[in-house]
Structures are given as structure tokens and as C-alpha cells.
Image (cartoon, rainbow, N blue to C red; front, side, top):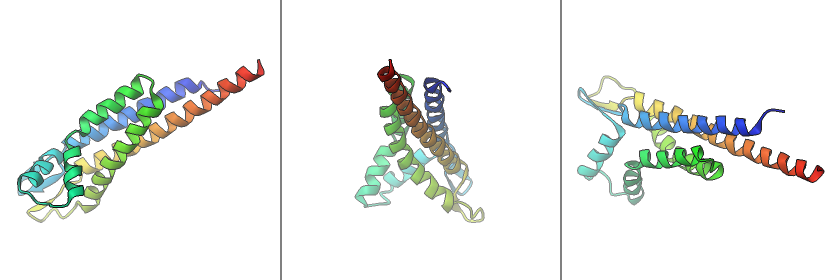
Length: 158
């Protein structure tokens, strides 16, 4: 029988690696204006500076976006410290938020001919990272739960 504890650790490490990739992707190029490429954080700053939206939900999302690296670091710390379920919940919620924005930007990319556009490097990298994070987090929770059930069954037999 495979070592469930090791499987949980490997999957938690995969979730953490996915979060790292997502954060790295958030610093890569997301938007192009003329010959200047901008990261997602620079784009958020421009939207805020020029007051380009009045939607309350979008404004809240923009405020949360700037703390994505901090939230990812917190989720990684929880996973590393063995708080698998809590770390997985934070990972999945963060990955859904970030992955949705990145996925939306990725499918809007293209049109290299125009003066303004979305560049795919950052959004695609971020989307891949969030997918890896979700798969790893869910897998870690499942293997941890199976391992706990196995231990409980073994205790009942003894």
C-alpha cells in the first residue's frame, strides 16, 4: 500500500508549486500598450489611477489583486506546516479568483497588430499555475482523508 502521508506531501508541494507559478505569471507581461508591456499589477494600477471602472465588485477585485502574492505565501505556509485542509481551502479559493481573471485575459489575447492588447504570456502562465495548484490541493485533501480513514480502521481492528 502506498504511503499516504508521502502522497499528501507530494500533492501539497504540487499545490505550492502551482501557486508559485501563478504568482510568477502575475508579474509577467499581461497587457501591451504601444511597445510597452505591463504586468497585471501595473494594469491594476492603471485602471485605478484613471478611474476606469465604477463597478463595486471590480473595484474590490482590484484591491484584492495586489495582495495575491501575500495570500499565496500564506497558503503555501499552511501547506508546508501540515495544515492541509486549511491550506487547500485557501489555495482553491485564491486559485479560482486568480485563475478566472487570468483565463479571461488569456482568451482575450491575440490581435498583435493593434496598439493596445492583451499579451498571453502572463495570463497563460498564471492560469496553468492555478490549475496545478487546484489539482494538487484537492489531491492532498483527498489523500489525507483516505489516510485518516485507513488509520481509524487499523485502530478499530487492533
